[in-house]
Image (tube, rainbow, N blue to C red):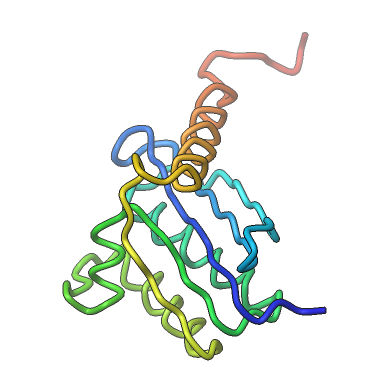
Length: 152
């Protein structure tokens, strides 16, 4: 049984800008049941790149799940306003992600991107924590210069 309509919360985090970064996505059915949860490190990136990559991963997963109508919630004003074409995508770093997201969105009957305040939405807070913790995890487990060697 495929779900025709879903809502998603996306967030990206970068510990510095740029820095160790990660994304988080949670996709829910219209009854509030979680369908998919994604939390992935994405290397050294800017926060805006992480936000865009989170949206792209959301679109990829939703498309693979057969979802036709998708509402994406984000706390990123830039992402939301560029999606609605209120702002132009000027960053050469973001343009490829934006273009790929637009291509994916064309596979759906409808995709909406809505800006929310993280502080007022528990699901937005959850994906924010997931992305922040994933980025911190990457930083904690990075090999240090002069670290372990093969002759131990």
